Image 1 (cartoon, helix red, strand yellow):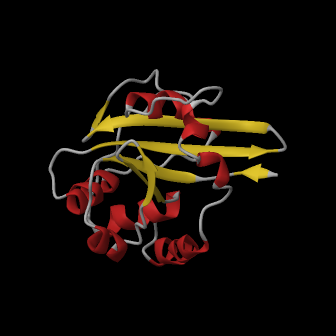
Image 2 (cartoon, helix red, strand yellow):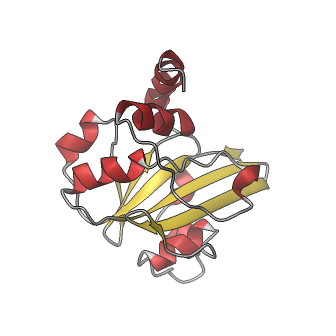
Image 3 (cartoon, one colour):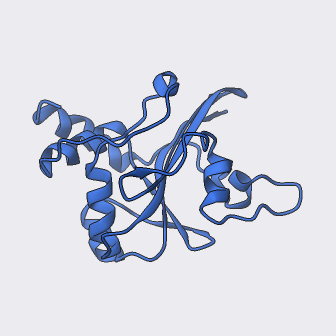
Length: 165
């Protein structure tokens, strides 16, 4: 069975109604963290709509996965969190039958916290997850039960195409 998700993990509270206007449907993970599914079409679309031009830094070696690093992600999070200061991770998995890869980066606003938080568990631990006995941080917050991104993100493929991004 596969595991292929792309998401943001936001630390702290947010305005649920406002988030949903951006198709950001938060899933509480515990540890004051919320998961929001995105994909590269979503981030490209909002980058164009918000007329953002910058990109977030990320560690080298992410070329093995499609990693959304558009500055618009920070702008969206700042809006829904009602704060100019947000701490979050962008996470990506691409596994099938136990073979594949994952990647994560942690940001404080636009600043990459460390290029060494390249696994999702390391990123989650930095965000405050304390792994429970015999589980890593990934499984402690229940990420293994989310196998694919939700279908509502499919529309961003066409929306991004319409904008030429």
